Length: 191
Ligand SMILES: [Zn+2]
Image 1: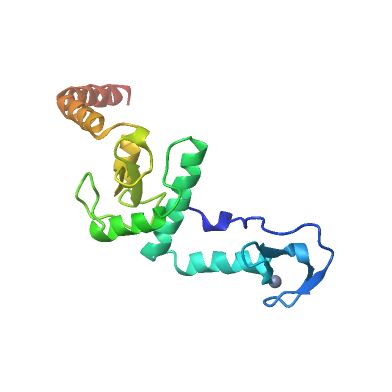
Image 2: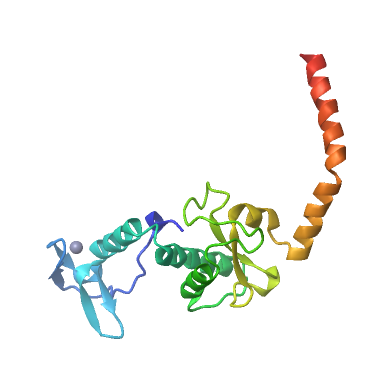
């Protein structure tokens, strides 16, 4: 999610002793400071530093565009899925998320409320990616978009387990109200 944490993938050939002038910063650097394009079999004209700066700038400039938001979100999903050994679609995830957003008009799957593209860590209505059946992973058909607050509540629950938890909360409402009154009175006594 964090473009500041972007690290370029090492595609360089470390063993070359040749130097080259970067087309962007015009500095002369060893060839290992340039990406090697495996399929085209050439070194890129700009150095890895300029290249990663360009990518970071692209994400900064476009961080509110749905395309970029879901590119970053899909990279995040793939990273966490890999770490947590959750199945996930290896390609086309960002495009799929963008389609879900456009088709669903940015409406949360569980609440029907309008979601926001920004404020991933701060906004309860920020769009997040959820697995309908958690164990099936981030695969097409099992992925839905929902607001951050419901996603955090749901954690690893299925939809039915989440509903059952909400019902329990509601049915316990009277008892909580009673406990709150007792709590309030005891605080008054102390004060
Ligand atoms: Zn450069």
